[in-house]
Image (cartoon, rainbow, N blue to C red):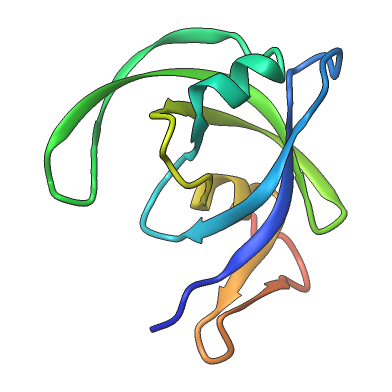
Length: 120
């Protein structure tokens, strides 16, 4: 199976800082978004706490997290974002996708908007 990327911007909640813009890996195996901690700090995203996350190797790692606005494909949502290591590829998790009514088409590995937001 291939990978899907999308250009996204992360803003602080009040949109007061300069956003962090990058190509984000769409990761349907991850709940939350992640970006390098220094880039989130530059965008004025504030850490809110710490959380243990399971990384791809299965190892538990503790990271700081916060809340931010994320914009992609002409839409925007507020989401949980992990302050990742400096070498981390920015990732877009499934919560942000679902909040904006976007899904990954498994056949074409492209993002597509749902015709309606499911409330069930």
